[in-house]
Structure formats: structure tokens, C-alpha cells
Image 1: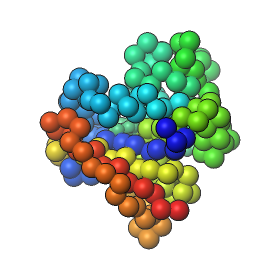
Image 2 (image 1 turned 180 degrees about the vertical axis):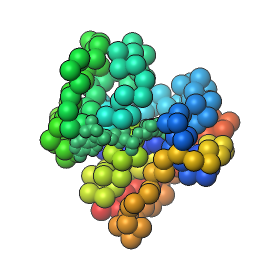
Image 3 (image 1 turned 45 degrees about the vertical axis):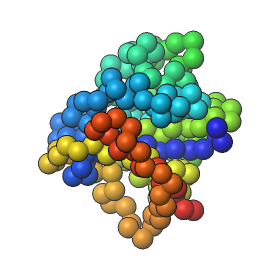
Length: 186
Ligand SMILES: NC(=O)c1ccc[n+]([C@@H]2O[C@H](COP(=O)([O-])OP(=O)(O)OC[C@H]3O[C@@H](n4cnc5c(N)ncnc54)[C@H](OP(=O)(O)O)[C@@H]3O)[C@@H](O)[C@H]2O)c1
């Protein structure tokens, strides 16, 4: 573990990170197999904190993270307004709502991670900000061979000349999932 900031997301072959209704169902049909994958278990072991955007946070039941989320670590949620009801926490999974911007969220997350990696798990708006400001060390794209047709695209609105990536590795993580690891050149 090297205390990296990793932005990671799962993408359809036609470039979407959720369908037109915001659903991830088709992108995670292999979720049970993924949980058994050594790369996934290594990511869980090496992750000391998670950063997510408020819309990604609000996708499911906010009280379900404490018992069901794979990363049982402090979570930092970017928002302009923290929810009035604080979500359920566990002994290791806590929630901090950060209204002072991405850099502040990452500073707090790195501190909480204490030398382990910080995972920025999305959504696309949040990851774009990381790439734009060169605030992540690596971009992890998991490609699955489904077509979604419509939805949110990760790279929409990014200056194509503003992002330079170098491939570090690629791997067949599950029978349907190919995991690309890119270095974000600063
Ligand atoms: N494929 C995958 O692996 C994956 C993973 C995660 C999410 N997703 C998809 O991503 C979608 C959501 O992505 P998204 O791009 O719409 O949103 P997002 O990045 O999850 O969240 C955006 C929200 O975060 C807050 N925020 C972001 N930057 C901020 C800043 N600098 N300062 C303060 N607040 C900030 C704002 O919340 P407020 O509006 O509260 O101010 C903003 O509306 C979901 O539908 C989900 O399906 C996919």
C-alpha cells in the first residue's frame, strides 16, 4: 500500500457508467464473482477511506452502508448540504459530509486512511473533478461487455487534452469484467 488516490468506476462497452435511470444493475451482474476476485479483495484490504459524490451516495438506502458496503472504512461524501438525518454507521464505517470541496474531502480522507489508499468511487461528476485537477494518482476502469445505449458518460465535458493516461495493467477480473489500471500523468 502506497497511500494512493484511486478513482475507479465500472463502464459499459459503449461508455456509460449507469443507464438512463441511474441503475448499475447491468454493470454489476457479476457482483458475487467480483467479491471473490483477488484484485477486489486486495482493494478492500488496501483501502483506508472512500470519497463519493452525494448522488452516488444517495443511490441506495443510506442506512444500508454500515452493514453491507464492501469498504468498511470512513466515507467522505461531497455535497453542498449535508442530509438532516445522519446515516447509520458501524465501528469502522463512518460518514463525513464535506461541503468545502474535493480537495478538502481528499485531505480529510488521506488523513483518515493513515497511509492506505483512498478510493474515489464516483459518480462521474466527482471523478471528472479529480482528473481535471490532477487529484488522483490512478484511474481504474472496469469494462463490462454490455451496451446501455443511454446514461451518464465518465468523460463528458472533460478537455481531451487535459488528461493524459498511461496504462499500468489490465486483467480479466471476472468472466465478464476487464480491469484497466491507468496512471494519471500529472
Ligand atoms: N458505474 C459505477 O461504478 C458507478 C459508481 C458510482 C456511481 N455511479 C453512477 O453515478 C451516478 C451519479 O453520478 P453524478 O456524476 O451524477 O454525481 P456524483 O459525482 O455522485 O455526485 C455529484 C454531487 O456531489 C456533490 N459534489 C460534487 N462535487 C462537489 C464539490 N466540489 N463541492 C460540493 N459538492 C460537490 C454535489 O452534491 P449536492 O447536489 O448535494 O450539492 C453534486 O450534485 C449515479 O446515478 C450512479 O449510477 C456509477
